[in-house]
Image (spheres, rainbow, N blue to C red):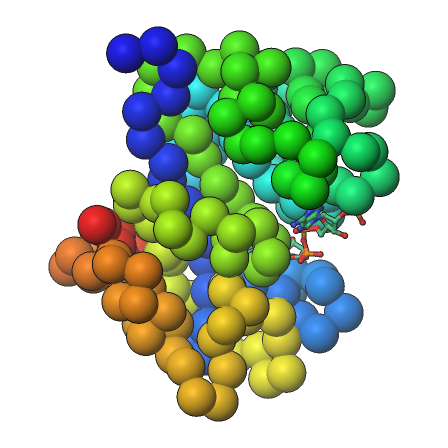
Length: 185
Ligand SMILES: NC(=O)c1ccc[n+]([C@@H]2O[C@H](COP(=O)([O-])OP(=O)(O)OC[C@H]3O[C@@H](n4cnc5c(N)ncnc54)[C@H](OP(=O)(O)O)[C@@H]3O)[C@@H](O)[C@H]2O)c1
């Protein structure tokens, strides 16, 4: 196959399903070393990383990763002057396929790493979503994983509506109450 053959999401959420606080900051209560190690190892194997302008993952190997950054500051596709191997993408002006072709991603998995609107945009396309739960953290009034999560729709509802089913939770850091569940089509 030419080009990527899988799309996989990665996030860590609080017990109430939030990825950040109301101000768009990720609190320390949902930061965990074992989860970071899990994410960074997966991203090292991804053929490209996709995220919104505020969700760069950092880490020692970040600069070497091919990445597609969503922004409305460009009309369609443009090189990213601030990061090597990086492309700015506005979905209103270019298709995802065009962005993937322009970044030159080969066979393998593309990793979607947020934030909320970007996670939502890819809901019809995930082959898998690796969702880490920080069971002891709560972020009242925070930003949900997907835009549609709210009073009438839970995270599980949204996954199910898009044909994704949960596998068994695995411990990443049992002492800290951190587990990861893979939702698959
Ligand atoms: N817990 C987790 O797993 C996790 C994961 C990801 C992020 N976060 C946290 O969430 C917070 C950031 O949240 P955020 O929602 O602001 O993140 P974001 O998606 O990274 O950034 C939002 C920006 O991305 C661009 N964008 C998003 N959707 C777009 C679309 N459909 N078309 C074009 N551009 C689009 C826009 O950029 P322009 O303004 O340039 O147009 C928008 O302002 C941070 O604290 C981050 O650390 C947490």
